[in-house]
Amino acid sequence: MRAGRVRARRPEGRRRNPLCLRWPRLGTPRARVPAGAVGLADRFCAVYPGASPGGWQLLGTTDARLWDLDRPDPALLAPGMTVRFREVGGRSGDDRGRSDQRR
Image 1: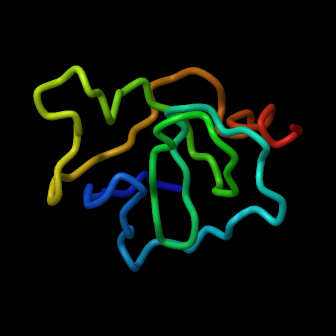
Image 2: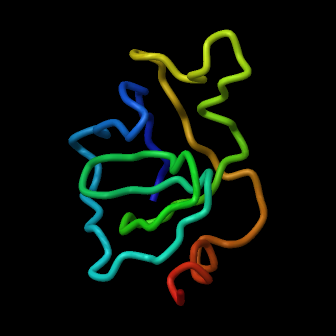
């Protein structure tokens, strides 16, 4: 799977390129997904802003603070911006999110 481009539109996510594969939601949502988890569901991609339950497939994580009330403009992303996800090392794709799936 190749990382796709995503344009920020709303905090909850953005529709990906229609030529990309569709990713189904999990049959049973996880009890807890960590803040910063990058999730895919159907043709949408989003970053979980805080720890919460969730049923999206997890692609990885980011340390970027997408929302910070201490910044002059609290939102890191604005409508029309392009976001590119890329692998930077760490655990292999088979291990990502595995501990969350067991909860």
